[in-house]
Image (cartoon, rainbow, N blue to C red; front, side):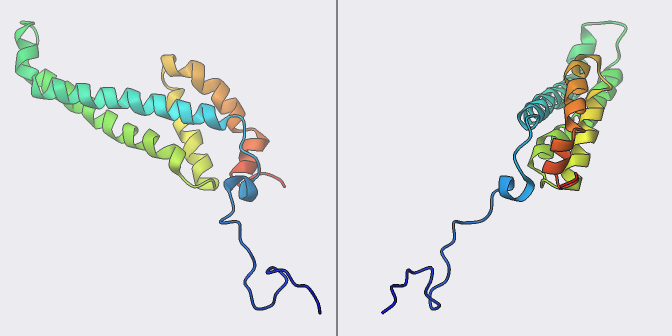
Length: 148
């Protein structure tokens, strides 16, 4: 009589270890990935501040304008609306960017997000090295775009 393990039995399904991990699909995680997540978190929090500050300025325009005789409440409402209008979309963009699938779209969104950081002098110090490592072949391979 042949001794058969459950894996060898034709009547039992093969034993599964669960769904494959990202490392099994795309290769090892690149070294730039934790820095990218930190960058997106910092940028999202910065734009949360812009959004909240913009809403505060918008709804307290009369109070702010009363402290300066050269400032009109309409100016403060416009400023608050601009801060909120810029802050909200960027907050959502940077909050969602690290959660995107690890494919071509995720890599391109990363390049765009890093590129937005290059427009600000305070974010440029982080964005330049991040961009250099983001366009590296290891990162491209992780997103399924590089040579295998």
